[in-house]
Amino acid sequence: MPVTAKLSRKFYEKLGDDVTNELVEWFNLVDATYRSDLRELNELNFARFEAKLEQRIAELRAEMQAGFARVDTKLEERTAELRGEMQAGFAPADAKITGGFRAGRSAARRVRDSAHEADVELLDRPSRDHRRVGVPGGEDDEGLRSYSHTERTW
Image (cartoon, rainbow, N blue to C red):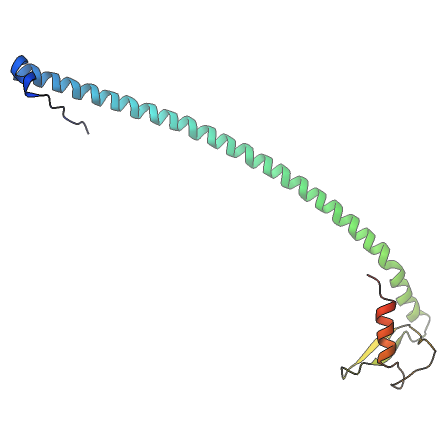
């Protein structure tokens, strides 16, 4: 929306109303032209900026997808290594547990914990002095505590 230029009274007195009004119209026309050119230039600059922005976003997405793919691959490799190590580490315990059952011997004994009403099963661990104390068929709390603190490794 053009702003109408208003000149001082001296212009009107020296040049007359017709010439001064024509001069005002010319200023308004120049103003509108410059505004139009400026608007067009701004739109072109914004379009260039937007195109560059879209290009850089696409590049960033590609880089991120490649990075995530590398991380996924490394994670799968490490998970496979860890599974292998865990299987190798658990193999002796599995053999001991399943070997005791296959040999036909009873691999479990009952232990009563005084803090609980339930019995707890221990697998294939003889008592220290090979006698059963406290509960028929099991050890007492002291035997359970010494077992849990001395033989457990993580």
